[in-house]
Image 1 (spheres, rainbow, N blue to C red):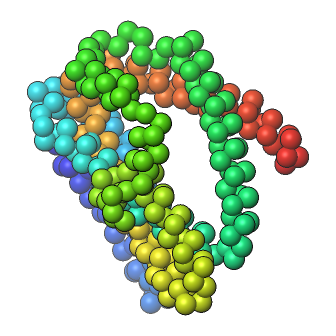
Image 2 (image 1 turned 135 degrees about the vertical axis):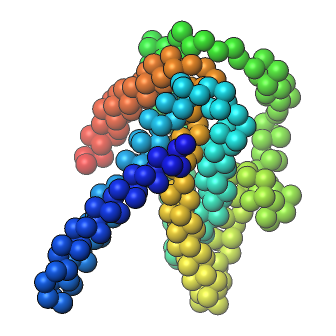
Length: 285
């Protein structure tokens, strides 16, 4: 149903663009050349964010009108599959970005100083961000009234893991079993650890590793190109996630979702004004 509606929108846009171009090509060859930018503008008339909004609306309609269809495993697969596609590319992008950044710095001591400052800044700002987020969430309570029971079995599993997890385990888990196991298992900290070591090794090699450095840079461009391709499936993922959510928990869930989004933006505004504003004032930016 969603694909048919989306195809209809695209077909309508294509017919409009073709008609517009056809009217311009009635003149000379020069006029036909000037009509090509018009076609490009027509192609941009239905951007990705608009497709996502249309997909969300269609997902709400399907979840409300056809709840049994919306809660099927095939519809749920659309949203879950899109999230997995994005997660698939995160590790290689982080690796290429970190390696390329470190390899371009000639002074290892400079990297160390910058890294220490960045870690301290990150820890302090993250603490303020968590405090503000918890405060706003407890005051607003965007999930209040949400008619859904939690999965106690899943929660107990994570509680047990947290109780048995020690600081030593956390540090040891940063070190991967192999150089590529972090990529295979989706462990971002392990990927980051390997990237830092790889980047320092490239920096120490100097000109001898120039070809490897260029390969990493080109690979990063390819990975961002992959992300651009995967994002074209965002409307399908948004449709599947919204249809499944509305079909399973009811249309009343939209109120909680809207409240959650509004709470997020409210928290972001408070964080920017109170925390980042103070940081900008101290840095005299």
